[in-house]
Length: 290
Image (cartoon, rainbow, N blue to C red):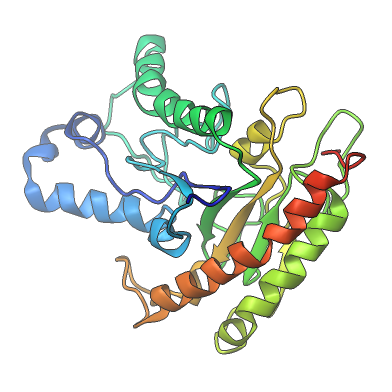
C-alpha cells in the first residue's frame, strides 16, 4: 500500500549530458578528467544525496535526473536572472560556459522542453491520479550563503521550512498564498526539531529550525499548492544544512560516516509523524491554503 506522500528532490542530481558539457567546456569536453572535474563541481554545488536522505518506501517519489545547472526544476518556467531556471554561472558567480557560447531562444526552449517539462509532468500526473495528503520538496543548503543567494556570507540554520510566507509562517500579502497555513508550519517545525535535535546539537551548525529563512520562496512548493489549481495540495520545501552530513572544506562530496543513513532514518520518522497534522488539515472543511 502506498503512502499518501509526494516527495521530490529537484536538485539531487549531479548529471549533465555530454552535449551540455560540450557547451560548457568546448574542446575540453574530450578530456575525461576535466569532464569529471566539472561533474564533481556541479554535484557539489547542488543538493547532493538528498534523494537518499528524503527517501521513504512506498511514497510517491520524483528525483531529478540532471543537475540544477542543466535546468533548475525548482524555479517557475519563465524565471530569468543569474539564479533563474537556466543559470549561466555557478553560485560563486563563475561562468559555467566556454568563451563565446550564447543561449539562443530556441536552445533555451529546447532545454526546458527536454528536462524541465517532463519532471513537472510527473508531479502533475502523480497528484492527479493519487490521493496525496501532502508533498515535501527536499533540499540541502550550504552552511553559509553563497555569493549568488539571498544571504551571502550569512550562517544558515540546521533546517529550514519553505512555505512561501513570512518567517512566522504568515502569508506575505493578499495576492500571495502559503503552501501550508502558519499554525501548521509552526507545528511541523516542532516535530522536525524533535526528530533531529540530537544530530543538530552534535554538529557545528546553528541549533535552530526556521520557517522561510533564509529562503521564503520555492517554485515547486508554490506551484503544487496554488489554490487556483484543481489538484492543489498542501506541503512544503525543506532545507537541510549540508554541514549536518558532508565533510567540510572539500571540493568533493564526502559524506560523514553513517550520517546520511541516520538522517534518512530520522526523515522517515518525521514524514510519518506529520501525517496526522495533514489529516487534520484535510478534515477541517474550513482550513484552506492562505
